[in-house]
Each structure stands twice: as C-alpha cells, then as structure tokens.
Image (cartoon, rainbow, N blue to C red):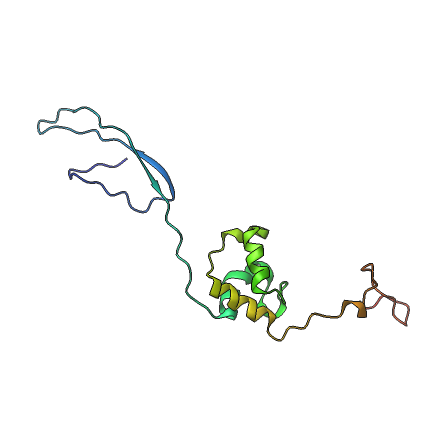
Length: 141
C-alpha cells in the first residue's frame, strides 16, 4: 500500500500481473472522505531481449548451461528450425527463451557449421545395438 499527497501515484517496479487500487482520501481537515471506486490495472511488460547476434556468444550465454560448452555440446548439429521447434514446444523449459529469429539463426549456424553427422551404422546395428568388434567386444567402448 502506498500513500501520497499528490493527485497521482506511481507504483514502479511491480511484476507482471493484475493489481487493484482504491483511494482513501482525506479533506483538508483530516476527515476521511468516501472511498473511491476500485480500478484494476494489468501490467504485462515483455522482458528485454538481447541484441547479440554472434552465434557462439549467444550459445555460451543462453544454451551452454543446459547443453554443455559449445565444444562438447549435446545439441551439436541442430539447425535454427530445430531450435525454433524446441522453443515452441517448451522442450526442457526452452519456451521461456526470448530470442529473435536472427539470434536463433546465428545459434543454428554455429551448431551446424562444419558439423558432419556421424555414420551410426559404423558402430551400431539397425536395431541400435552396438556391433561386435573383431576382438570380441562391442565397438565404441
């Protein structure tokens, strides 16, 4: 609750949400006047978005916390469309990310630059199990 001697009141720094206000006013002699009508105000301020468009920098500040450092990323090879789909589907909480299309494209370009998807059939059978090596153990161990 706030009070002021002015005819206006600023309630700055509040979180997004709906707030109701009513005014208790006093006359010059300090007598309480009739309470005002209740008003509702909805605050919906979009969070500030970053303007960085360098994919590696954006990945480091936005993605690395969940997907490891770029050099060992768990999402290496993912494209901008893969990233957009993950954000839209809120995969792992990614729906809260506020990135521009150009930022998503920069991250996708970074993740796909020079990336060659491995040939899984080198180590895996069609059912996904590991192939046996010539020495008797499974390959890839």
